[in-house]
Length: 340
Ligand code: 13P
Image 1 (cartoon, rainbow, N blue to C red):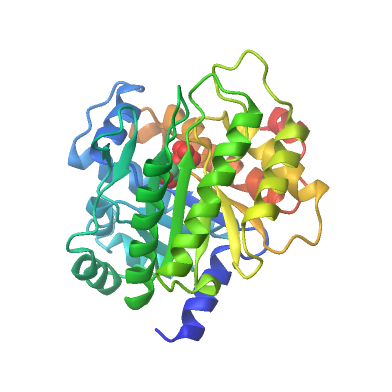
Image 2 (cartoon, rainbow, N blue to C red; image 1 turned 180 degrees about the vertical axis):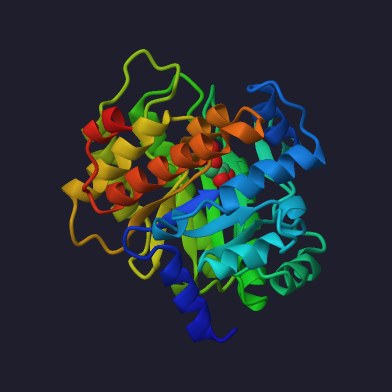
């Protein structure tokens, strides 16, 4: 892929009114999701569920790319066609999660480092052969008593930058994801501080590793109150703080920024994205979505592991995709939920 193609891919990922569907849950995470609907996490059930998500008619109006898991990129649809090909047939770009998970960071109680750099060059070459056009690496930053530490932020930013450089060498667009978790009792102000420190360090490391920003997508948390914080910031405040934090810390040359949902309800994740796009015009980058749970939750519940529920499950997914597509344009309204 030429430099021009990397740029085109990155821009297509955040094309107007389109976003990314993350279906790259690791084996332990998909087991948790399947436990919630009482089905076993077998290879067959995982393939059947992902088939439903990948082959949803009409999804390509709202979805530019899907992030797959290592197992999924090697599986095939009900008609025998490999999943990456099924996506390309629909003009949806296949992506792949390439970090090997967040492990305890030695010497840093309560903090994590994402592993997976060893052998990454070879794995990226194989994924590209299998059809991947972009890759994702998630780093986890935890807020707590005297954490995050600078040591943790720097170690994760360095790994993200090493991964991003390898992706560009392999002609894959890196989606760099530093996720400040929203599970604690911190205020939105604390989330702002930690997100800012993380982004500043990340872009410094990307520079040090000679990563081309024009060929990179940022996937990040919103600036938001911790789930256990007694005072929850409202929709407009989340939008304002998030946009301000991004304006202060993300270079304008980046082709786009997408958000993770991080445990927000599907409706709230959509409302936050909409408030940003409705309230702020002429930002340097498009703001879009790369949600996992906030797109999948209603679909997963409706499906419940039963073939007979496939149609309502697909409808539930399409509804969330459409709402988030409208949120990218600042044209979503809560009334669309009642109509569903
Ligand atoms: P959530 O939207 O469920 O947070 O997941 C997105 C994702 O891909 C995290 O890496």
